[in-house]
Length: 103
Ligand SMILES: [Zn+2]
Image (cartoon, rainbow, N blue to C red; front, side, top):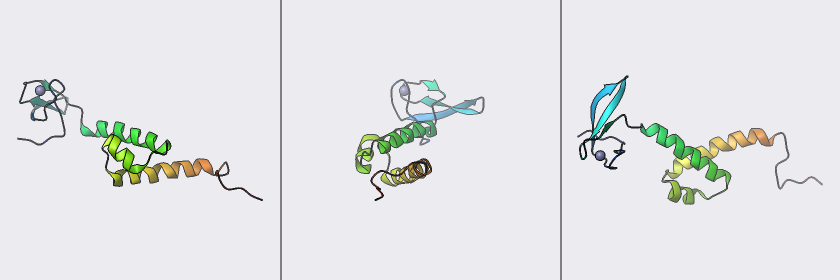
């Protein structure tokens, strides 16, 4: 059986197999309940997960807590934290960073 990251939208089973294609997108059929659909690829789910991770990073939730909450691996969270830190560094150049007082 083909190992896919998809789950059936009807019964939640992970036992799905490829069953042709429509408009160039592969169709999958659940072998448990015979439900057939164009399942959402894992990349879309991951994008939603990564957006949630970035929100949690902004709230200054610890990396290990984010792992527990979202299931995203810690190296991925570190990568996203560095990426968002680069974005905030550009924004911080216009205003002084908190905790740095002069005088
Ligand atoms: Zn099913």
